[in-house]
Image 1 (cartoon, one colour):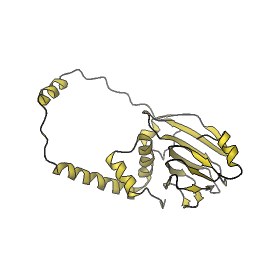
Image 2 (cartoon, one colour):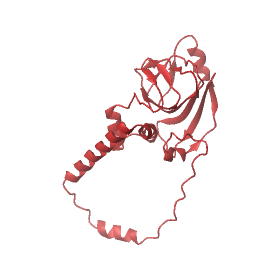
Image 3 (tube, helix red, strand yellow):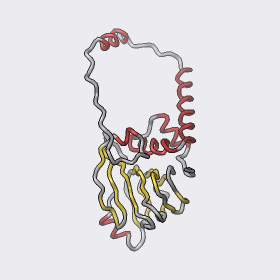
Image 4 (cartoon, one colour):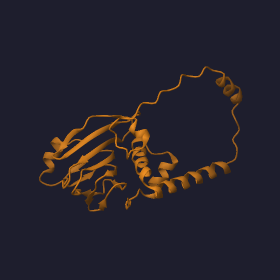
Length: 214
């Protein structure tokens, strides 16, 4: 698998610093699972962050901090938390922690296109879902009102930004307008982390605005 499209370094740095919301972290973690190059870059940034912290001057503890900490160590421990089982049919290309989230049912989005929501355990501005498109499907021209991160799990598509196959990462924002065309031969399955909405273009865009919801 040759990965051609990666997140920008600023996006990877934001991931390493822990400042992205959960939905965006899911998208970045999905790409990192497939991409050794970006994993190494994130590890390097985490190492830099550790060095910065190590070089900081020590801060004085508040009065009574040690006593409060020791008291908490004496408190009864909560029972072991049982981790939820992985969703049986969750794609193996997803990170393990994502496969443990609750998945909704597949639902119709447009002819030859289906989506399946992934229910995140904490609220946030980014919704996450699987998007599956049949071979040779041409999606309507559209742009975005906010950020959309797309990770290709299997299959592939082409739009004005190039060809995207398994492991590739595609970022859309309000400056991007594209018309993806799905490759022949197999379904294209993607994980999508989306803020805002799509703005459909062209003669069929009006109908899409009435009936297509992601």
